[in-house]
Image (cartoon, rainbow, N blue to C red; front, top):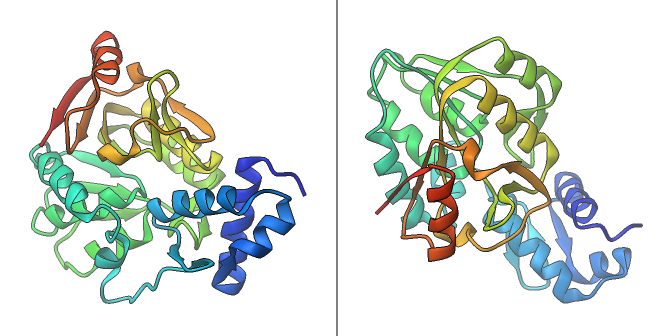
Length: 254
């Protein structure tokens, strides 16, 4: 089996979906890579909220139906809360917004519980569940192929729904931010959804915590100029700020 990073990550997600756990030893043997390489893969997926690292491997995160947010927000929870608080200031009644399936969006969705005049579209199962508990909420579930490991709908049907709309604001996320390549993702399906949102939104607001800067993903989702506003929890490095300023991206941080 090839040891291409994207192939490894997708295989790990498939094995998690089947068995609920993976081991470093088995994956290293299967891909003929070092245990350190596998551990980096697992850590990357943990930061995305797809698994929980344990000694010798990783397991599917527990997802109690009563508390989807608290479990998905375990990684960098404080930083995500800061970002969500800043993003909430850009919510306006009578607007049509899209929230993608990034984990920071789960924190932002808390601010929509008492905002029934905002039209919310999302492909995130956890956000749908959060807002469905509120009788007065106005949420549209954007369907497609259900990817349990991502807790989201993805694929052609999801893209087709997005292409039928124009959103006032698309709140999006990314797995990593590279100073030369821009905003990146691990999976192609996630990248395609975010690219479609760029074309069908008046404004794109990127929510990315500081741990994502200086790392590389597998797919170049956005150039810096594709984003109108970046909200993060700490000042980016000088080289990032220079690139963002060149691209005329407004930056807000806690």
